[in-house]
Each structure stands twice: as C-alpha cells, then as structure tokens.
Image (cartoon, rainbow, N blue to C red; front, side, top):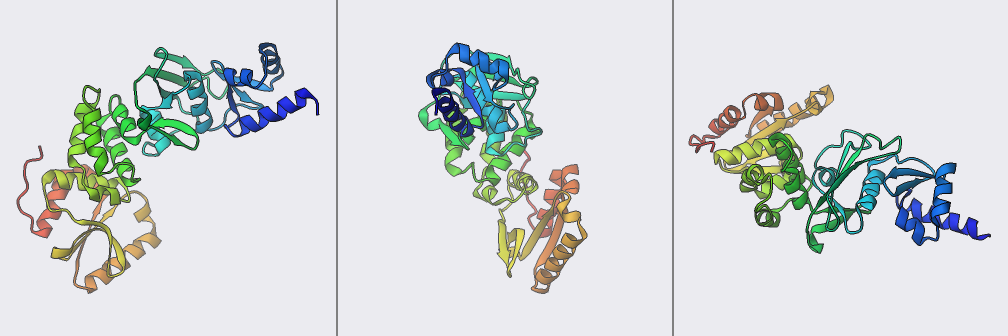
Length: 318
C-alpha cells in the first residue's frame, strides 16, 4: 500500500469516529500539507463546513456533526453552552436537524460569531463567547463537549422566555439531570449572571417529587401546587397495582393529569377509564384534569383540586 492510500485510510478511520468532521489542525497533524488540503477541497474529498473545519466525503447531516464542527472552529477546550447544551442534554426540543444557532463557550480566544459555509450549514450561525469554567463544569455526551446541565440552564435563562425556562427546567427534572444538590450549586453560580432573576424562583420551588414526573404537564401542575403551599402528593406511584399521577394516601385521593394527544386515543381512554373504575371500586376518589383546562387558569384548577381534598387555606401566589 502506497503512502497516499495509507494516509487516506487513516483519515477515513479518524473522521468516521468523529461524524466525518475534521479540523484543519487535525489534518496537518495527520501529515496533510496545505497544498493537499486545497487539492482535496477542489476534488470534493473535503468540504468546508465552517471556518477551518471540513467534512470528509460528504456534507454534515446531523446536529451532532455540526456541534462537533462548531467546537473545532471555536478551539481547544470549548464546549456547548446555553440553548445548544440544553438541546444536547435533551431538555430543550430540537426543531430542525441542523440547528440555526449554536452557542459555544471557550475559555481562550475572543468572542466572535460566524456563519457556516457548506450547503447544510450556510444558515447556521455559531456564537462563541469567552467564558471561564472549571474542569468539573465540563461533560461529554456522545463525544460532544458541553457544560453541565446546571450551567446550561443558567446560560439559557439569560436569553429565553419565562415559558421556555420553565419547560426546560421541568424537562431537566424529568430526565433526572437536576437534583437536590444542584439547587444550592445553581444559586451560587447565578450570582451576577443574566437570567438569574427569572430562574431563581423556579429553584426555590424545587422538590424531590419533580424528579418523578413523566411529563411537563405534571411538572407545571406540581409547581403551581407547591407555589400555593398545599401538602405534596406522592407522584407516579402504584396504588392497588396501578400507576397513578398524584396520590394523597391520607385522603384516599388520586389525581390523573391528562395531557396532549396521548389521552385522546380511544384505546388509551378505555384503559384510563378502566383504571379509574378499579380504583374507585377500592374506595378511592379519582379526579381528572386536562392540560387545556389547567392552562386556561392554573390557579383556579389547583385551588379546585385542593378544595376536593379539603385543603381550604392557600397562601398568596407570591
């Protein structure tokens, strides 16, 4: 095997392990000269994705590949932050395969912003901010460097809407990425940071039960319930062999939270009604609350459920 073929195979293996994305410095380290890089760009073996970052043999076709490219362009030690880190952690929904904006934190270099240059990335903007962070703040997910869930959420709070922050916080809780120990750390990290004013109230409402939610709707109900100061239920526990959303054992009261299209299917509706009939036959009281009704007036619905339980005193909404 000649030297060129050997080099080609080595590059293929290297790139394949990294979503076929390579940086200019990495190519030079693998023995590729500047002339050869230019030649491969002309022949299409390499495609420029971002500044000094290339895709081998094809354009990028996944968010992971674009995130890797952005980190290579930002330089050593960089990590996804803010919206991008939240998307990678999974507590902010990806609306498109190739993200329109990528947020990167870099410990060195200057803050800057640049656009992608390949067909897949030409509408993608990479924003690099200068940030100081500790080694313990960094994580890796699927080979992509990103800041911890706590830092990602704090950075998101600097630019997102209140609704987006609340949903992201609850999704992080649902995924088990935000726990008791993270609350005190978050308060410390928020000092002097943008978005702290909007995130701080959510941290004050955190309870262990939020880590047991199955949906954002369950989390929204519990946040309103906590804010009103009512006694907490058990969340997503089995009662007489059936899992229920909220259960107050001392009251023999079950609340089922019906959110989204999942509960609209006839088969699921029949299952829900069958479970309700069985629980009621065991002497329990079962109430149901839809997301639409809750969203129309959360405080009214929370107080209505509380009244059914006999909790008549509610403190101020704050």
